[in-house]
Amino acid sequence: MVSGCRIGNADGPAETGLNALSLCQYSHREDSDDNYLYCPTSEDLKTDGIGNFRKHWKNGEPIIVKQVFDRSSMSSWDPMAIWRGIRETSDEKMKEENRMVKAIDCLDGSEINIELGQFMKGYSEGHIHENGWPQILKLKDWPSPSASEEFLLYQRPEFISKVPLLQYIHSKWGLLNVAAKLPHYSLQNDVGPKIYISYGISDELGRGDSVTNLHFNMRDMVYLLVHTSEAKLKDWQRTKIEMIQKAHKESEAKESRGDPQICSEGSSPDSSLNTKNNELDLESNQNDSIMDQGFNIYSNAEGNVAKCELPFRQNGDVSEKTHPGVLWDVFRRQDIPKVTEYLKMHWKELGKSDDIVNEFVTWPLYDGAVFLDRHHKRMLKEEFGVEPWSFEQNLGEAIFVPAGCPFQARNVQSTVQLGLDFLSPESLGEAVRLAGEVRCLPNEHEAKLQVLEVGKISLYAASSAIKEVQKLVLDPKLGAEIGYGDPNLTAMVSENYEKMVKRRQITCA
Image 1 (cartoon, rainbow, N blue to C red):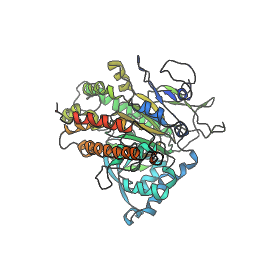
Image 2 (image 1 turned 135 degrees about the vertical axis):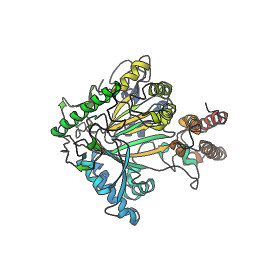
Image 3 (image 1 turned 60 degrees about the vertical axis):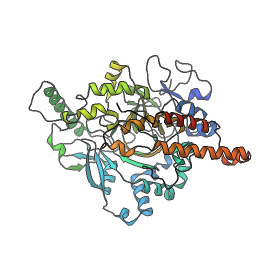
Image 4 (image 1 turned 90 degrees about the horizontal axis):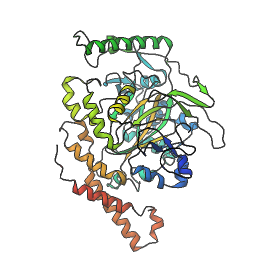
């Protein structure tokens, strides 16, 4: 076993040949045959086709595609390079030197206004509050989906061709992207690529970490890590953080005993956390890691010491050593009831106040309001036997997350992610189920704004498939030109459409 990846005979699913080398163990559930995830390289997919991908994808398993691009192209995805490129391709408003943008402060989820140039500086140098606590920010709605698409089209035209599985993920020409069958004039929510830029540090603070809270999407998603910047805390800052964490734990202990003289949920034991921030050079250092016989040693999402195999060049030489950029936890669809029950039981420990308990307990995974740290993941396994797939994402890797799989992520470096949403035939049935649930949410719930018109998508997809089949029947010579390499696609769409029709009358519990 190397970095969780099987290199010989071991317990797990029966696999042979090259596919066995592409399976990595990222969970240790008992009596389960899905602890291993499919982790091919981009070249594997080009050489072997999508057969193995579909085999695992149809089971609702996330997939990690490695070596989508090498480190030599990382500089072109530096946030400053993206900003320059967008200024060259966008309107005058986007070209403002001191453009104000919105960012999310991960400490309390508040929305702040910040100059884009200041945010870009903090990406590599860091921001802190006056008391030394790191201020972790995530850009909101910048760049916009349309600006991101223009940037990719005009500034990085060669990049899209390198992204794996375009037949699944391309928003316009993906043959296996059911949502791509909608006509161009149809209104769609946030189609096209998105660029996500956020801060991150390796230390898990427990409060204010750069995280994507636990939630699921109605669509399939792929996240490609294109840039990272490591910022390291100084010793004096670690000392201050430890002091604040100790004070916060004492405050929580008093609260559990019913002491009324403590701060309310969401507040800090040090009020200066809510004051203005200062910039701080966090002493960026990419080479000061502990090395042991060719492996990086780091603490993974579970808090255990793990080995991360270093990337290799095709000629066998070891490439530049890197740290992971993001730590992921992805839960199985069938575990949603148990995860929901755990959240209901532990809502107060997770920091939810009395005034939102009813909404939170009813729709916890739609709110995206909590992040399960090591302690809660351990408790979840002890109490319900539920364990996620936990893995790191390195530079140049793409993470495919199926629709309906709850997931969360924590940045351990400042990162730039390229995100694309799509809807595969394998996930259409799950999207129908989720659409029914969303209709039962309160009218003012934010998730209703993102609901997919699955019925319309299915109809257009079925119509498109029928037209292509008709072309093949009428003129078999067109088959090669159309490039329809999957004879089961029409049957799959039809099967999922029938499920949708049966479920169209949904009674809300």
